Length: 67
Ligand SMILES: [Zn+2]
Image 1 (cartoon, rainbow, N blue to C red):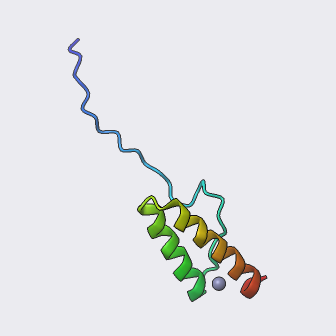
Image 2 (cartoon, helix red, strand yellow; image 1 turned 30 degrees about the horizontal axis):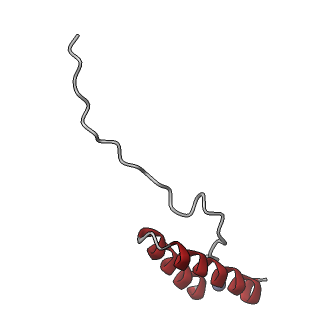
């Protein structure tokens, strides 16, 4: 029984947008798409304040245009 040393291959897989609870973009809406893309980018950059700013803008736009 040879115990092999495990190489650290575990990628911390984070599911974007799943656990955030932010507003969801409406499919087909360019404005939603823009904000969602910016939010994704902020998320990827670890920019939490910008991400929540995008969430606020998304929520406001959803209420304005889709509410
Ligand atoms: Zn929209």
